Image (cartoon, rainbow, N blue to C red; front, side, top):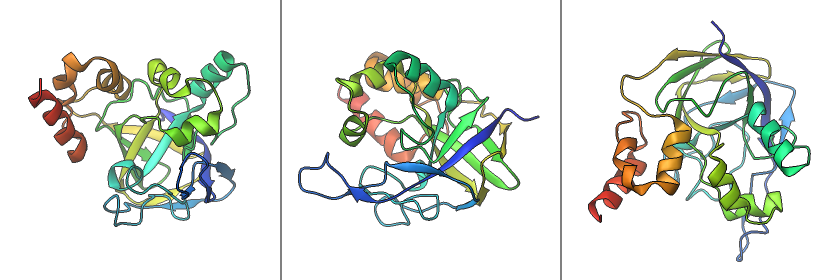
Length: 222
C-alpha cells in the first residue's frame, strides 16, 4: 500500500553563504531535477561523503549531513500551510530539502520507521530539522527561526538503510514501524520547548547516537 509519493527531487548548487561571517558555502539553494539521483549512506558527518544524495553539496559539514542527516524531506502539505501563513508562494526545494513529499504526514512520522521509496531505496526518519542562521537569511522573514520552531512543521532527516535511486513520482511506502518510538514533530517540540519531557525522546530506539548523548547530558544537569 502506498502511503505517499515523491513530488520532486531537489539538488543544490554550492553558493557563498551570506549568513556566515567568515565566508564558506551553502547548499541550501535546491531546485527540482527531472532525472533519477543516486542515494547512499554518506558516512560520518565531518569526514564522510556528507550528503546522501550524490551531487548535492553541503557547506557546513560540522552541523549538516552524515549518516543521520543523509537526506532531508519536507511535505507539500506543510509548504502549503506556510504559503498561506506567510502570504507568498513556496516552491518545492525552497527549504533546502532533497525530496518534497505528498500524501505522507511527516508531522506524524515516527523516528525509526522505515520507508521504501521506489524500487529498492529504504530510508529511516531520525529527527526534525533544527533551523539555523542560513535558513533565516534564505527566508528573509523576521524571527523566522522562532516561528519555524514554534510551528513544529520541521520535515524530517533520514538515514539510508538500503541505497537506491530517487526519482520524482516514486511511491513511498511505510514498511516498518518500531515498537518504541515517538513522532518526529513531537520529539522536536519537546527538544525545543518542553525540557521536562526530554526523557520521552530517549524512548525512540533509532535515535541518532549523538543526539541521545546530548539528551542524556541535558538530563544529567537537571
